[in-house]
Image 1: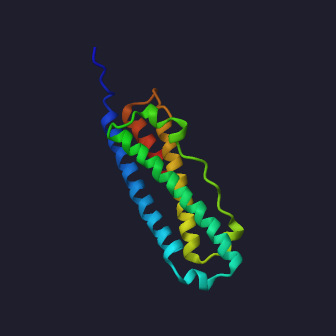
Image 2: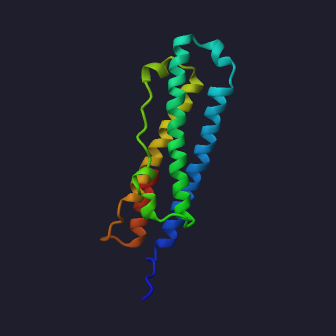
Image 3: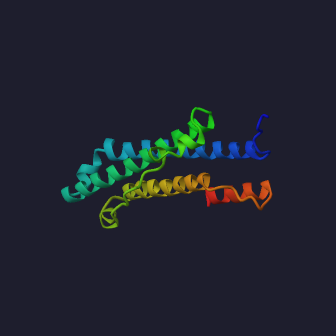
Length: 159
């Protein structure tokens, strides 16, 4: 007997795929912006004192690590979407989002506006990816119709 996916599996997979692709594009763009700002911007050294530069270096490492965690997790989700990995494989501990080290608000206050914006954007992106990971991991309610369950899952993912 051939087991068929639930009737609402295709729309859920499509929504999942679009969310993952959208977040992936955003993460790659943000990673490129952060790299350009923190590595290729010569005015940073002239604008900030040495202690602030050290703090900025630490925040840069936290920001890029946060972004790389998100990108790696999204690549795993893309692999699930195209059938290269199963959902069970994607849920293994080493394929889940790692813990993000929070930025130091005292250090961030002393950074240029653009640096603070990039750091905050990376934190927000990580939080959104974490919500999506949690939404994908949570079982769908069985006491509601498929349309209501789908709407609730999408709301939880983007909320």
